[in-house]
Length: 227
Image 1 (cartoon, rainbow, N blue to C red):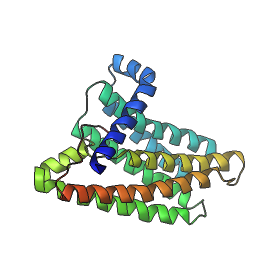
Image 2 (image 1 turned 90 degrees about the vertical axis):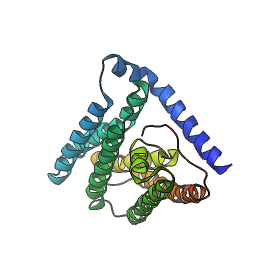
Image 3 (image 1 turned 90 degrees about the horizontal axis):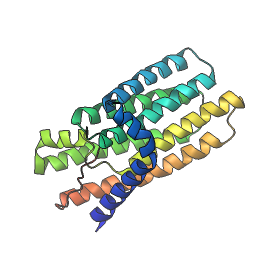
């Protein structure tokens, strides 16, 4: 029952998101742009954002770069599904770009943003990553380690709550940069979004723990999906 609910919600969220942004995705398909090119562009923006944070560029510039880096995370997956170019390499690149963006944004705002929520966020994210590794080992009993890793790289078994979590983290970090650029100090937008992100992380921990229990009981939580 729980497995069916999670898979159903994942599919509904993915279909709704893809359908909403389809008018923006189809032109990219017609132009023959490969989803991995979007991911590589996002990686370049993340490196540029890291340089800007290090050199203390204007907050408006940092916000703009971070915004487009985060947008690349959304469109590469949608483009891969629309163009039928879902691959393990693309999924791995997407995960690497997400990790880079998370580290850069966290490091960039951690030194500027005095809030205990960031510590809770970091602990929660580390716990989720440990649970994801456990999921791979549990699935390896059925599929073998190599295939379990490949399936995970392709986005198999990824839950929608993790996408919401990452979206809220990016929105909170960019909201903070926006506040600093416009008002010169936080006014609460970033803090509100970060609190919502921490709450979503707590939900994600419960969901991933439930998935491990389901997998151990022989109920697979695998679906053909790209990040």
